[in-house]
Image 1 (cartoon, protein in one colour):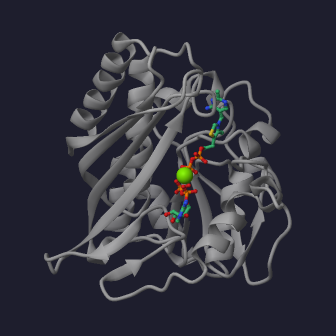
Image 2: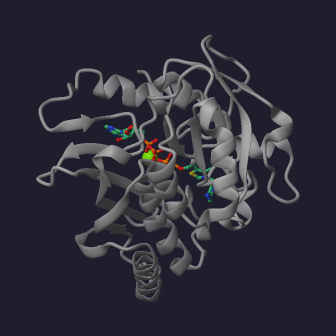
Image 3: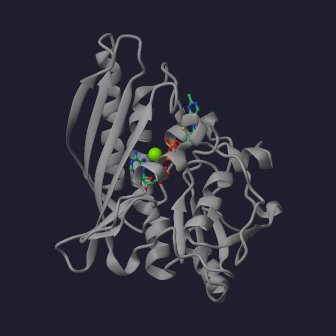
Length: 298
Ligand SMILES: Nc1ncnc2c1ncn2[C@@H]1O[C@H](COP(=O)(O)OP(=O)(O)O)[C@@H](O)[C@H]1O
Ligand SMILES: Cc1ncc(C[n+]2csc(CCOP(=O)(O)OP(=O)(O)O)c2C)c(N)n1
Ligand SMILES: [Mg+2]
């Protein structure tokens, strides 16, 4: 019997969805930060996302649950941002063991509310269920969002010659950033509006996992300047590549616009680093391996 760890996360999703066709109304199906579907408004698309955090996988059981609530919603907000959009409505699914403390769930909801308040969008319902005694708590957020049609940025548009950028610094998120990161909503929509990147995604599984994904989806390769990868304080390159949960933006821009982009960026976001870390190539690359994968690091 084949186990899911033998396939790894990406191959499993690929196998499960290989026969799913993109029917009418679907702009982007499986494979991007969000699904994108037509909306009644001719100027926007609707974004759909669901994302779970699991005790013991995404946070420790004794964590401050307000921070866990923030993280659970901010992950979804970050995915909307990565398409150039923002969140509108959120549903919260809880699956808890029977002895779970009410205070912890209340704190979780405060974190969700604070995050929704800050980044916009409304909490409108959910689902409550249980897990067997001794099992881990599961919190899942499903959301709908919106993006202007002419500002949609996918993972598939990178082309050879594009300059590759990341925002912020990478690595070491487990020291705390994974719980209280700022989804890059403002930066992403500024980019989408002013310099429409050829491709963009948020970094959740580490640059070593996510850049090869972006390159694969775009049918191109990449050449990294490792010395230009921005390291979080106290981190080594291997942490920046592999730790994951940076929730920074990874994007590519045609070379002709990068000088203008960098000037404008420094004025618009003086406190957020934008680093040129490499270029897209026409040949496939094998500079990177690693990062986070559920079941195994495949
Ligand atoms: N169990 C599943 N069934 C169908 N599609 C899935 C499943 N899990 C993930 N996907 C799709 O695979 C892609 C990658 O998912 P994920 O790694 O969760 O995205 P992200 O890293 O942006 O949060 C997304 O387009 C998502 O919709
Ligand atoms: C207790 C604990 N162990 C490990 C980690 C690190 N970690 C957990 S999940 C993950 C990757 C991102 O999660 P995933 O569910 O793959 O996010 P997605 O790509 O779906 O957005 C990382 C780096 C953590 N945050 N907490
Ligand atoms: Mg996921």
